[in-house]
Image 1 (tube, helix red, strand yellow):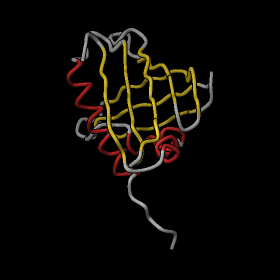
Image 2 (spheres, one colour):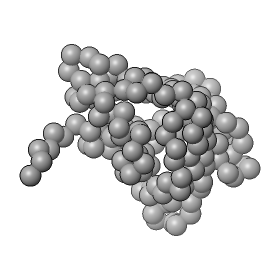
Image 3 (spheres, one colour):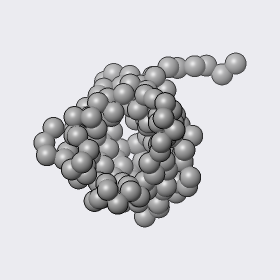
Image 4 (spheres, one colour):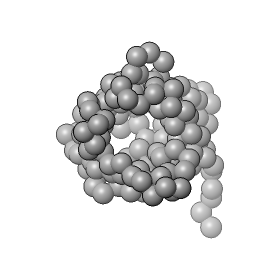
Length: 149
């Protein structure tokens, strides 16, 4: 971790297509993105280049929430996603850029995420911990192979 940047890396035992769908499908995204103890509501999501999104995270314990949105800058199916995040709260200024790379490897998918421009008032280590929780939830969503009944 460097100033206002987190870098995450995981290898998931599933296809890049399945991981990509977890980002592209708004219901799937809302299920794994918020860290433990938060509920995500996606108000609007156009998953395409130059498409926008708006969502909020609500703290289940306190009921407090924060909303944010952004734009999808670049999307290469099953390989690459780059998007912006900007909080609605003026006390959390700036625009974050998140880059997601998916690479097919022998045992599944190499996932590499870089989030830059985290507002200075958010401790980077807390953001990193939140991402780790989110990626554990992502793993639990995409790795199981559940046959159709």
